[in-house]
Amino acid sequence: DHRILIPASSLIGASFLILADTLARTLQAPQEIPVGVITALCRCRIHRKRQHWHQLSRRLL
Image (cartoon, rainbow, N blue to C red; front, side):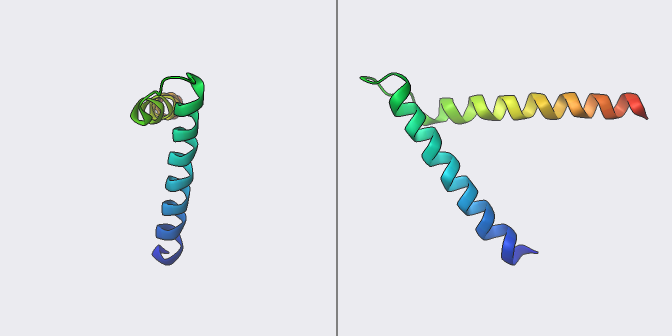
């Protein structure tokens, strides 16, 4: 249902970006890491896990 999905995804996305921004500011205190680097690293991990599960499901078929 889109009435639930759209507000929930916007809240989760905003929370994720706030967390990524906080991490980017605190990991190297005097300098800032670009937020895109943090989000790309998280996305890379999610993509790898998805690929792994996809390969496992293909082996089972």
